Each structure stands twice: as C-alpha cells, then as structure tokens.
Picture 1: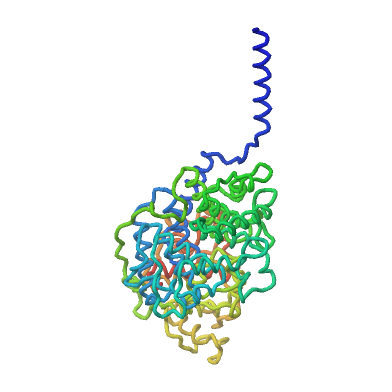
Picture 2: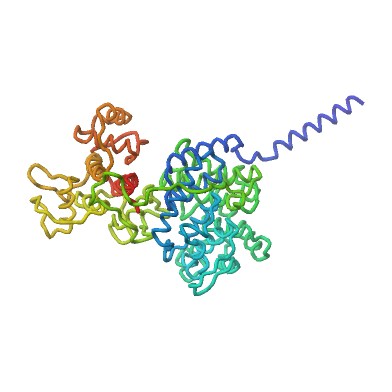
Length: 558
C-alpha cells in the first residue's frame, strides 16, 4: 500500500512539474523592477522638468505622470505649475488656440490630475471650447479622443458653447470615433474623415490606443464594446514578436505606451494572452527603451526626442503600476492629489530688478506656432523652447513649416533673435564695414552692437554670414543676461569648479570661460553633457534652448 501511495505521489509530482513547464512565465518585469523604474524616472522627470510650462513637452505630461505616480513631489511644484497656467491663460484671454483644441484638453487633464477645476482658471472656463463640435474635430481623431478624456478626467458636465455652430455632446464625440473606425479595426489620425490621405486607411497603434482610452468608460454601449473588441484584435495582430508596436514603420516606445494605457483603462491585464508574444508583454517591451537616470529612448537606436519618450514612458509605467496595485486607472482621477492654492509668481514678463529699462518681454503673437521637422515623428528635444520663441516672433523657421534645427546659425541671425528676445528696437548703425544699411540684418546688428551684445573684429568687420561657436554664443548670451539684470560675474574658483566637470574644459578660450561657467551654473547650458565642445558650431535648436532658458530665468517670457 505504501509503494502504491509513493507511486501515485510520484506521478502526481511529475504532473505538477510538467504543468509548471507548460505555463509560460509571462513578463520579466517583476514588482521590484517596476517600482524601481518608476522611482528613478520620477526623480529624473522632477529634475528635468523642474519648472513645468504649458506645452506638450516639459509641461502637462510631466505633471500628469508625477501626480499619478505617488512620487513625493513638494506641493509647491504643482502650485507653481498652476500659477504658470493661470498666467498663460490670462495672457491669451482664454483663447489658447483657434484650431488646435487639444491645447485645451491637455491642460484640462493636467489640472484634473492635481485636483484643480478647469472651469475657472484665471476667470476663464477652459471647458467651453470643447462644446464646439466642429472646431474640436478639426484635428482629426485627436480632437474627439482628447475631448472625451479631458471631460471624463474630472467628471465634468458637457459645457455649453453659445458661439458654437454645432453644440457638442459626449455622444457625438463617441459616435465620431466609431464612425472613423477603419476596416482593419483600428484608427488613424485622419482615417475616415474628409481630410484622409494616402496611408490613413491603415490603423496606427498610437491613435488606436488613444481611441480605446477615450472609449474605455463607455463599454456599456453595445457599439462601443464591439468596436473595442475589433480594435483589440487588430492591435494583437499588429504587435511585433517582441510585444511592441511600430508607427510609420518604426518600432518605438510611445506606441507601446499608448496600448499599455489603453489596456489599463479597459481593465485588461497586460499579460492578456492576446498581447503576449514569445512570453513577452508590452511592459517587457517598454522596459527595453528604459535608461536608468536618463528616462526613455524613442527608438532602440536612440533616435528621436528622449524627453517626449521619457514623459510618455513614465506615465506608461505609472498606468501599469496603478493597475497592478488595484488603483484607479491613469485617467480616472476622482482619487487625484488635491493641490490647494497657488504661488504668487512675479507678473509674467516683468523682468528682474536692475534690468536695462529698454529690455522688454515679448507677448505671444502666434499661439501654437510649430514646425513639421520638430514635432510628431520628428520630435526634437528642444521643441518646447523653439515653439515658445516662435510663438512670440523671436525666432523663425528656415521655411514656413521647417525650422531646420540642426543647421548652424550665422552671426547676423544670432543678433536678430537676441534683439527680438530682449524686445529691443532694431536700429541700423554705421559700425561695421561689412554691414550695409540696407542689409536685412543691419538694424539688428546695429542695436546688438550698441548694447554691447556683439562686437566686431579689430578690422571693424562683423562677418555677418560667419557661424557661431558654442563659446561665442555663451559670451553673447551672458552679455544679454547682464542687460536683463542677472549677475554674470564668476570668481576664478567658482569658474574653475563649474568647468572642471567637463573633460575638454582646457580647450576653451580664456575670454569665454567666465561666460561659459555662468551659462552652465545658471542651467542656460546643459550640465549633464560630458564635453563642452566649445569650438563646435552651435545649432539653431541649441541657440533657441539657450535663449529660452535665459529669458525664463530673467522672467521675460510673458
């Protein structure tokens, strides 16, 4: 009897062992790994976006990720952001954009994440715009998708817009999304609309993921449930063997994030069999783009904007963790942190005490101004700075829709954006032998020379078409900062301490070291770089970032 029992026990153990081998160990990202990645990325985000502005990068998404992550963020961080939003909304008199209504939606979601009411921001109701159906759907699928997410993030009632040609309802936005579903089951930006072009007939994981997020709260509607199942089947087929997703032919982290958030909003586990490929989940795939202390990559090769990828990768991890912990999903915000009050900020654009009286701030003239080669799949890490300056008419593109961020900048172009940035009145001067009074840049070079921002060569030439090196740019930006009331003087000890962290600091010119040290010390230049590369031509994007940083610290961004 004992032998029979032992034999039965042996058979039972063998079955258990065989069964254990047949059960796939889905996902290599355990709880500790996920928690550590969130903590690390949250710290990176808090440091990188230390002063969040209104914008798709360096603004709302960083705030949303931090607010929903549970990371210990000082309340002043959110109060300061809210004050920034108030000032921004007031400066535009509540009209954030004439066409891009996702500008309203993005801010509404961010405000919901910190417990603020978007119906009264500086005396303006940001929800009102979303009551205009025709203007909201102008942006393709992004319009109705984000209108729904924004409205539902704070459980807001549908706003009434007396100026709307067509008063919107939630049902209309839901139906718009359903009507634009493609034959393959997913969605694309303009697929199913009158603006559809070649390629819009194939579903895109980013747009499909966001559409599923918007529809997640409406699964009780039969047509929505049916569309959701079709879209999930479509995305399961499109998922790569590594459990990731591609957009425009390139596998990237952001596409994976949108589908992670979609499943979390729908309450579907990330190890759902439909979305496990070769024993890998989407979370496993997302973590291949993760870089400790440096956020996320856009693609595995490192191309694209790390900041945009980092902000999206961060909230993708947060969505996964909230689902794992049984908490409300990312956009179900009735458990949002409650930030009371705001911080009294100096009036935006008022400048610093001691600034030159001729220096003035530039108001926004072109809300939402951007360029095709710094956005979307071409997203550039300096996009927020470029857009902020372009919106104020401080910097222009090489063409109407192209900025050419990696091109070098001439001395004449640099003088122009500096003069524009400081709000100085252009005025031609007879100072340089190679600058004619009828040259387009003569007034800018003239006034930049008058205020000591630029100087010429010993032979009284300016070399307007010559390029600008990094150390030359630092000198001119430092001179501009002094006009703005900033203390630019550095003693030799501090100067040496700041520059010694760079491996090539000995290659810098003596005449540029104080200015370089000032720019690094004030975070006008990025201290995380290993080398200064002082004699390398600085790019248009780098110049934009330097000037934006300087103007921000000098409180000249109105």
